[in-house]
Length: 211
Image (cartoon, rainbow, N blue to C red; front, side, top):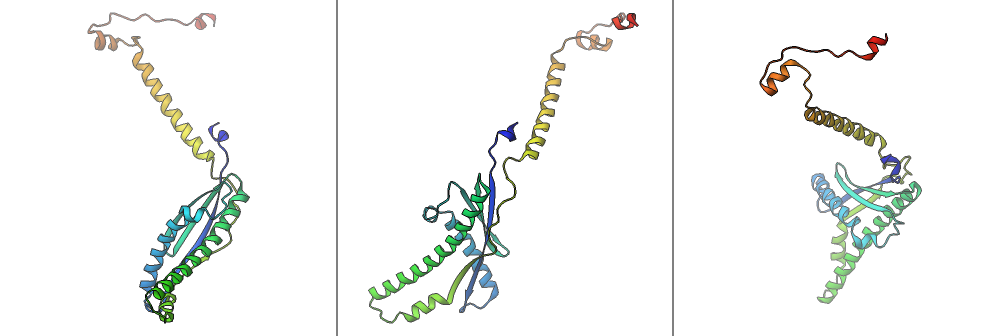
């Protein structure tokens, strides 16, 4: 019943590969470490309000996590409509790649402006130095439409319900057994009241006589 009362929620996934290349640092270990750091930075940037305000989310929720082997950004979009979830996921992934490129170009433009303010006219070397360290983002595959909802999780809810039901039933049985003051066996007399039983009277069921 709890599962039926929940609104279905679908989750679409997008995976963005982060690659760092540098002419000045040809070592692969340095590039791999820089790629991991970039992935972690882009993860926070992707969920920032500055970026999300530029994307029409259509009521979808966006979350992201980064991986290190290889450096990836795992993007997750949740919505009550599976088609909207996949469409928004594709849009957010593509828009973020463009957003990262725009930030890189804006950084180079600010460098040129600062150099010109300092009276430096030959800024070609500075710009070339900026382009020697380039980070690239690429969407590994198109975002797929989710086949089924992630909420409700009917199987998990059923297991939890059965477990709680058994625990509550066992607890209720123990409480009822503790509250009962009926003496059923002779040894209970001595244990509870400190006296010994003289005998026992059996109660016959009415069904025995009818038989």
